[in-house]
Image (tube, rainbow over all chains, first blue to last red; front, top):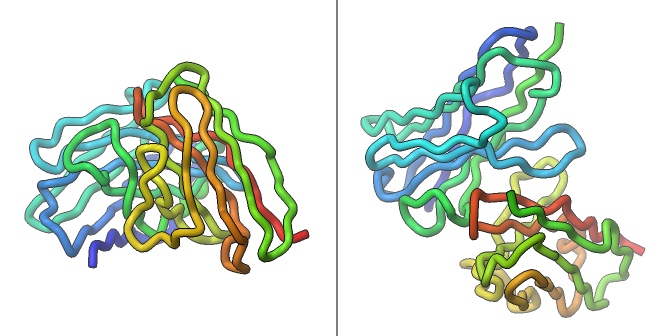
Length: 122
Length: 106
């Protein structure tokens, strides 16, 4: 079955960087894009950006431009999201999610990874 | 950015009752609207896409309707496992989510 498995929880200090991984299985990795969505504690869902697993093209949410980088490693079917210059308001659960309709940025999200809690605290 | 608003914020119902959730877009999204269910400690799960299409494995008691700016998710008869938070999402432009509706047990 299609599955996305994310790396474990992280605790970081303000100003540091974090890199979260998302390993895909059960489908042809390069046929679908991956989006990243975050959820602050007790809050709603925020789309962070998208990467094409086919050619590495990216689109990032405007508020995160300059601080986020999304990459993929097709040899291991793994997507990565790096967030730099972390602030306390970056504390959230970070999800990767596969696009339902192939490799396009404006997409539905299915399935989702299990989530990775990133805590930013001094 | 297309803003999605959801109402009500909380819906208190009993098992077996019908649930009607609303999502309104700040501008037309055509039929490019989806619904997700999220339970505590879990990732969201896609229920409905393109306003009215059930995702794989989703029970028939879940249905979606609407187009343009006004959309509805209906759960015909609530099962115990349906008590959760429901989010709408649009893909007409850069993806955005609504703030959610919590369906809790009355």
